[in-house]
Amino acid sequence: MAPSALPDRPSTPSPSLPRPRILVPEKVSAEGLALLKAHYAVDVRSGLSPDDLLSLIPSYHGLIVRSETKVTAAVLEAGHNLRVVARAGVGVDNIDVAAATAHGIVVVNSPAGNIVAAAEHTIALLLAVARNIGRADASLKAEKWERSKLVGVEVGRKTLGIIGLGKVGMKVARMAIGLGMRVVALDPYASADVAKQAGVQLVLSLDALLPEVDFLTIHTPLLASTLNLLGEAEFKKMKKSARVLNVARGGVYNEAALVRALDEGWIAGAGIDVFTTEPVAEGTPAARRLAGHERVVATPHLGASTVEAQENVSMDVCTQVLEILRGGLPTAAVNAPLIMPEEYRRLQPFVRLIERMGGLYTQHFAGGRGGMVGGRRFELVYHGELASISNTRPLFAALVKGLVSPISDAGGRDVNIVNAGLVARERGIAIDERHVHDESSGSPPTYAGLVTLRSLDGVGGEQAMEGYVSGTAIYISKLDRFEANFHPEGTLLILHNYDQPGMIGNVGMVLGRHGINIGSMQVARLNREARLAMAKTAAGAGGLVDGPVVEIGEEEEKAAKEALMIVGVDGDVTKEVLQELVEDEGILNVSLIRL
Ligand SMILES: NC(=O)C1=CN([C@@H]2O[C@H](COP(=O)(O)OP(=O)(O)OC[C@H]3O[C@@H](n4cnc5c(N)ncnc54)[C@H](O)[C@@H]3O)[C@@H](O)[C@H]2O)C=CC1
Ligand SMILES: O=C(O)C(=O)COP(=O)(O)O
Image (tube, rainbow, N blue to C red; front, side, top):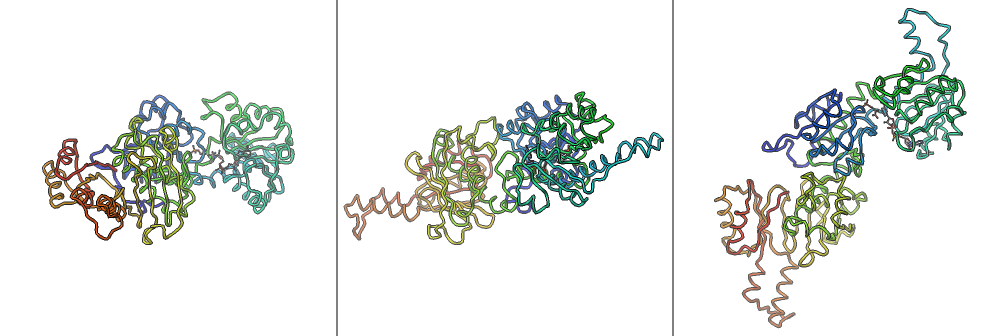
C-alpha cells in the first residue's frame, strides 16, 4: 500500500487545522516514525506512568505501543481525539480492544512483521535449555569451570510438541524439522493439509501430546481459553526429562504450577521469554521465582527484539496510522473488517465514493437533519466491476459513516469502519445491498463500477443518487432527477433553480460580494425520464396523453427547465450567504455540502 497509491486527499493536513499528534510511549523503530514525522507531530515519550498516559492522551489522535503500555478502557475513554491505536507487534492483549471498538477507535497491528524473530528466539531458547547455555555462561563468568555439571541433551531425533500451529508455531515447526526433530502439534483450528505438507503430525488432545514430547513450546495468543492451559496436572503428565518453552504469553502455563513442576522435578527445565507480570522485578512472586529459577533460561520478552523485526513492525503500523489519519483504510485492523492489501487498491476509491454519497444524502436530501436519516431504509446497488466484489463490508460501513458523520454528535469523534455497524443499528438505519451483474442494466461500459444509492422511504418519495469510479477519481452521475457529473469533494453549494438566463451570474455576484471564491461550477439538467414524465403530466393536463402534440402551460414549461447548479467553493459559507442565495429570483432551494 504505497502512499503514492492514495487518492487525492491532501498529504498534509490543512495549515489551518492543528497538526494531528501521535504519542509513542515505547521504543519503536525510527524507520516507520520517519514516515509519520513528515505529516504529524510525533512525540516519543518513554517511561510514562499509567497516570501520565491518562493525562496526556486527550490531546493525541494516534497512539503507537508495544507490549509494555497498558491501553485500558480508561485510557481509551480519556482519549477523545484518538482515532487509532497501533500495536507495533502481534499480541494485543495489553489493549482493551472491545473498549476501542465501542469508542470507534481502530486498533491495528503487524501480524507478520516479527514472526521470524519470535520463531528464532524459540529455537535459541530450545538449544539454550538443552545445553545449559545460561548456567554455563554465568558459571564461567564467575571464574568456574564446571564441565561435568553442565552436560546437556541433544534435540536431534527428539520430539517437539507445539501448542498453537499458527504463524510463529509453523515457523518453529519447520526450523525444528530442520534440526532433525519430530514435530507433533495441537491446534484445533489448524489445517490438517498444511500440517501434513510441513511434516507435522496433528494430535487432538493435550493428553495425546504431553506424555510424548521431549520439548514443548506454546504459540497461542493469551485468551480466556488459553489462560492456565497447563497447570500442575498437565506438567505431571510429561516426561521427567521434558523441557518447556514459552515465547508466546505469560499465563498460558500457570506460573506457580510451573515453578512447582521444576522444584519437584516433574519436568527438567524451561526457557521462558514472557511472564504474567512484566517487568518481572515488579511482578508477582511466581513470575520472579520463575525468572530466577536455576533450571530456567529466562529472557526479558525479547522474542520480537531484533533489528529486522522492529523495522518491519514499525513500517507496518506507521503506514497504517498514516493511512487512517488521512481517512483511509488499514490493512491489518484487529477490530475492523480486514481488507487484504491486494483488495485495497481496488476498494479504496469505492469506499471514498460511497462515503461521500452518504454525506451528500444527509446534507442534500435530509438537509443535515439527523431525524431524516435515522430510521430510514436504504438500498445500495453495485453494478459493473463492483458487482463481482463479495467482501462489501467496507462499502457498507462507508455508507453508514457517510450518512451519519455530518450529524454525529459522538463528542465530535468520527464514525469509522469499526463502529459503523453499531452506529447504524443505534440509529435504526437499515441498508440492503444488491449486486447487479447485467451489463445492460444501465452501467456505462467505461465505468469501472457504478453505485446506486436509494432511500426507500425518503420523505417525498424515493430519492436516488448514482456515482461511479474512473481510475481513482470519483464522480456523482445522478442526483435525484438530475444528470450530473461532478466530483463529490470539498465544500459544495447545490442550488436547485429554474434553468433561465442570468442565474449563474447572480450566484457569482452573491458569492463574490462575500469574498467566496468559486473553484468549480456545473449545471445538472433533468434526466430523460424526468423530462418525459414532465411532458406526460403536461400532456395529461391538456387531455392529450399519447397525442403527438403536447401543449405545455407556462408553469410546466418552467418546471421542465429546472436544473441544479453545483458550485465548488473555497471559504466560509454563512447562513446569511445561503439566505441571500435562496432569495434570488429563480432559486428554489440551496444546500451546503461539506465532504
Ligand atoms: N515473545 C514475543 O516477543 C512474541 C510473542 N508473540 C506471541 O506469539 C503468539 C502467536 O503469534 P502468531 O503465531 O503470530 O499468532 P497466530 O494467530 O498466527 O497463531 C495462533 C495459533 O494458536 C491457535 N490456538 C488458539 N487457541 C488455541 C488452543 N486453545 N489450543 C491450541 N491452539 C490454539 C490458533 O488456532 C492459531 O493457529 C501470540 O500470543 C503473540 O503475541 C508473537 C511475536 C513475538
Ligand atoms: O508482537 C508480540 O506479540 C510481542 O510480544 C512483541 O512484544 P514487544 O513489541 O517486543 O514488546
